[in-house]
Length: 531
Image (tube, rainbow, N blue to C red; front, side):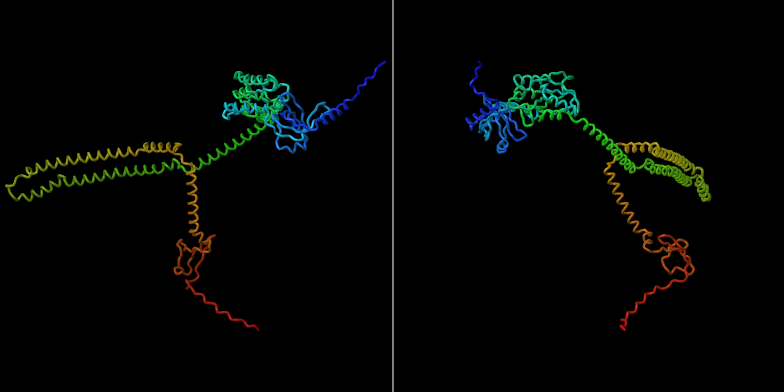
């Protein structure tokens, strides 16, 4: 015969409710001191976290109404004092504390350790801004250090394929737990040890969010030193936007999320193509505009530079005039010297002397035989006269040759080849960039000339007879074209030409000039009659 046990039988729900009543009755209100870990703010506004110390931990929950009255922001690693009541959560068979008030007790042990390590490494200069390197604009090869099984690598690869597909090499490492820190440091050193042709252009160290304990591998000193010593630019993408680890300070740039790290690593290829096309259009437009401006400037400068024909016209004309005058001067000089020579020769010609001697001989014939013979008296003077006439001829010949040599030397200096050489030198100097006029100065001179020309044209227009005729005046002239300035010079029946602003007509004078009459003043008006 079977025996029936006397132990009461409970359902799971009955036992869970009994335990809940027992715990809530025994611990109506408690005060707990511990460190926050695994903090999470739900979309409903409730707060969920764990309070722990060195040996145990307990789940905690804070409802939305109580959380809205907090004066500080809870975060992992913060040591707090929680006041509330113990309760259970029957669905998961665990007990928890429902926090009604939360106060800061101090910085947690982990955060204190991390802060002390941060100050020590910063003092060594591992976080100095001058150690940061600029990321490559479009890396060809990207190295990723993360877990191969998580969603992080999929997010990075998906974002890279959307923006700018690149070659990606994954170095799988554990991102938390025992031995994670040495593996991460070894991965960074391994990528840097690759040969130049296979080494990545950029490194991404990535991990998803987690508590302070989960992220401790990225706060390890060996990981921080490996990131600071990396020759390859490194992006740190550890945790979520609010999570901060020591590798973030040592990396060249920190990304708030792994997806943001992929966005920082590469640009958007479509945007680059569009920007490049726009730059090409702008470059072409700028080149055409610059070419047009240079053409206009060259045209303006060439208009100001005189033509070679203009430069050579005046020297060529002076050369022609000098050549003409040189020939005439030569003949004139020769004629002048010939006339002078003839004049001198006539004064010393032997015929004059013979005539004079004949007259003297006739005068002396009557003196008798006492006088000596004329031949004896004229022998010495005749010899002197012949000597002097020979010297005069030689002197004239020498002077003619001297003037001819001087004329030849002058004609050599005026040779067209010398002028052509001088023109070639001036043309080379004008074509030299060193004497190219300043465009701004040339434009200023052009504008000044335009203003002067406009003012002169206005003055000419104001003084022009056409302007006077347009005001109603008439220009009177006789058949010979002479101006008729007075009525007194006109005769009856004479033909005159009247020039108006829009044409000319011919008229005939009917009568003589009349005196200019002074108009008679109008009689004063009298007041009219009323009736």
